[in-house]
Length: 126
Image (cartoon, rainbow, N blue to C red; front, top):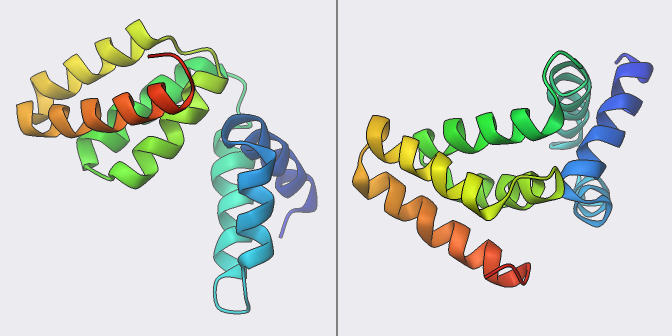
């Protein structure tokens, strides 16, 4: 493991999805899941999110579109919260969902709207 990339990833992960969520996941990791948690923190959050070519807000917007396209709604909710933390507005979330509808279909966009509504209500934005 690259300790520097892991630490960078840990900071990026916490600033996007929240320190409490990250610490809870890392604390719950056992010998079976810990290597994956460490690898994802280093690779996704350190290497991927650590590349400053794309700012965090844009990266969050890209993630919402891609995760929405994949239909991974639990992860979509998590990244919707992270997107809000990274400055993505309700209007921008709606526009992202419109793109999901165009390229992935209306049923998938409806799932995104359901998840977005839940997150926006919980965050006091709707």
